[in-house]
Image 1 (cartoon, helix red, strand yellow):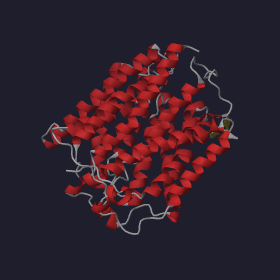
Image 2 (cartoon, helix red, strand yellow):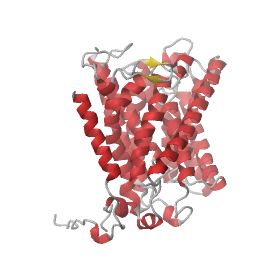
Image 3 (cartoon, chains in turn green, red):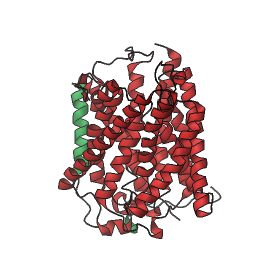
Image 4 (cartoon, chains in turn yellow, purple):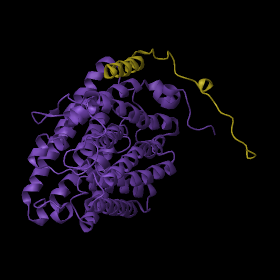
Length: 42
Length: 406
């Protein structure tokens, strides 16, 4: 039973990866999350 | 159960685990800065993906009860019926320690291939390819050689994966490179490594992890493990020195990348031989790898014009083939402790022939199988990203992230 559930969970993840819609256009630099640079004082 | 042997194998498994992210660093330094994360992700993602695959169906296909010498049965699907007190046949370690150790081998093999299609492969196609390849190519090959399959019965020697891991991944990489075609940047400055410090870091961690890979394959803290540990280091060193020598003679510089790639080539070549040869042979095996692999690299890229982006075939394919054949030349029963396990130079020419057969079988199976898998996947998903995304870089276009904020 647990093995079957593990198969189902893994299969669901794979299906979600394969069928998630592609972005209609390429990501732009503005969509990239940026992190403030650490200062020397840090 | 022997607790010392068990601890040794578990630590070895942890060392081998480190090799897959290390491979990501090795490859990541070799690509353009806009594709670093996607290259790291190939290795990191595969480590996670194959860890689950191995538990659910990979292990039983490779090491389940033999079915006609070709594949393991489904008796251990989901590791059903394997408990912590079960002992691996012929050894003194738990079966679960062996499962964990072999899991790391299964994970790194498709990660090795990823260097061939770096900077241009569609991630969905990559997911499917890794899943199918590890099931349809890796698991049967592991069964043939280690799981009681036909090459095992035939007498093929592969101590830690020269045939199962390196020849298969190297040949698969060549097929991937041919089928996917060249990068837009092939033979331009944009194809040059963006950060060799990452690559040298990766090579160093690979060298470290390889002690687990090879010595751990003795499946116990034995004299054979000590010998495998020593020859692993010797061959890596000889490979680094030889490739650096080639680059110095041919190009006028003692190349850092040459030394890093050379140590990996030496490690690849000693892998099938590690438990069967002595230290002097290991020097010759490492030197051979450090000479043959860069020559193969130039042949593939310059003469054939194939964009095997990070030279997987030259290093792992040619290094693996050389190692498999060298095992048939240099095997010495004194180091394996098995009477009669000798190569040509120790009076047993037949072993070289057996190694040739095993090598040919692995090349044919991995080559043809990889081609079919890629063609089938291409029916459902494009293997490559669009030209627009490739120019933008896969880090931004596929992952929405950037490696550097400089």
